[in-house]
Length: 442
Image 1 (cartoon, helix red, strand yellow):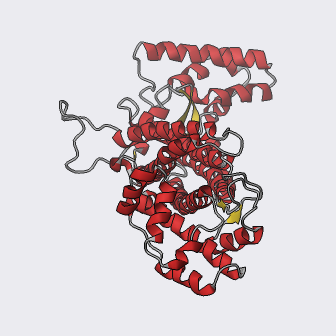
Image 2 (cartoon, rainbow, N blue to C red; image 1 turned 30 degrees about the vertical axis):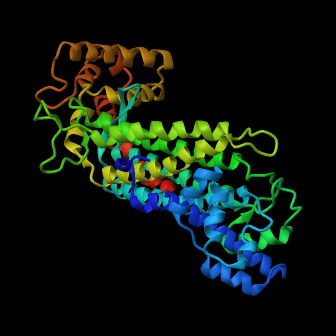
């Protein structure tokens, strides 16, 4: 975990103390369950629940000798108890405490991520409504296509995040499971009822069938859910970075008073937040790889997964949480420049209306092939003019493309001046925005 990219609300769930505290919660739940089943004295169970504690420093001292963190933990806790300590960790194996404890950590952390998603969705929705009808050019292959609105771009992002929210909520059901099934998962030394009672106490579901561990496909599901969402967040960030390019300059990250962009070039206003998000997304995707590798453990279990999970689990949660908050800040404070969007929309001299003209000609009886030839012929003339640096409009404000179309005798045989001019109406491209918004923002 890199503190630079961490928030205390999330990191508190992944400290060494938090790890041991989760184990202790599991062990106490097991003790309560044993007492409920009448297998251990209630008085002893009450003492354990009330008095059991641990010291991180003491655990580290013991582990230096035992080379086993769970045994060191049990020893430290037992030192805080009396004779009732004989019931602590009774009938359990290390993974019963460790994996169930991790489930508690994952559940608490995923709750935060889910709230992060809702927060970001709300910010996206607010900006989408604000720019519902803010015209801009839509681009495919990086090249101008047709008029869209910035609100529609944001609506796409919102809809994408809604899918991630559903996926994360479903993932919660997958990872919020624990086990107290013993060394080989056969419940030889602890009845199924013990596990059921303990899981109810912990707010988890029992792993229906385990071996020595909770199966790692569950963890892989989590890792891929976070990685996929990180890729979407990166997509949003890359879009902002493109829009902030000097020659585009349609949107910009908020630039605070006193902020500096370069040690050498004082004029610079760089998209550092979204660049940072792009890098963080790469890390989160990378964490999915060890999670996938961990699925194939030997037989009933080996510990090849353990070392990787000490890295990727906390880092994936902490980094994702930080990234979500950073992206939320970018969206909430994004400077949007409608005038520049409109300027860029007109940059290609009206070529963005070519499909509208193409579709009008067949209605007038022109074949698809001839219509395409006529429309493209005039479009190529505009490109040649733009390449030579000529203005995209005349003194009347008419676009180059409109001028060429009006002067095309073959075209004028099929379409009147009024029909041609109507093809250049922006309202045609925004007429369904309200309907789209109703589908997205339900």
